[in-house]
Length: 216
Image 1: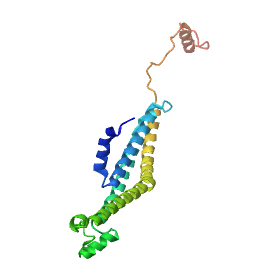
Image 2: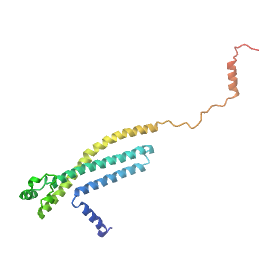
Image 3: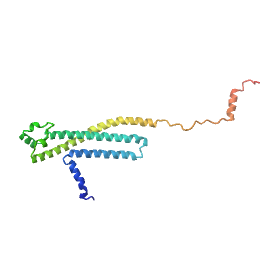
Image 4: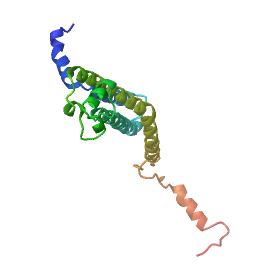
């Protein structure tokens, strides 16, 4: 059993990189999950003796391509949702009521929504309100990333993967059929029976039949 002191550096690293961005942790762990799942699938195809080698040549690249589609679409969608939500919160377009009240008191409420405006840096929030703002920001960050993951894994990624896989599968089947239908090369010379005296006699009598007259 590992001692807590052994895991402490790992815990410190996770806290340092993901403490203020739970959405980023969700994205990274999701990508790691996709990679491991796809690697296991490719490995399973590779060691499966019931699948012919000719089919493995096409199945393994197809699985790798599917993994690339899954990972790229997952990252693109979840990161887009996360970035949009973070921008809305950072610029004050989406903030809790306590933050809005303090911004109103400081005559900064009209700046909310401007891309150049940063609530934490420009509003000089009180410690208590800043703490609530950070908690709100982390919650929105995680919720937006979760929503992006749901959209990616259940709607966009399956549709994109199935469309691309169908096109690629048709091409793979055509290539596989072409390989399997290639005629085998003839490696042996054609066999001809050795002629015998009967063959010569038959040729002789066919030339000079019994009906022909005797010629001197």
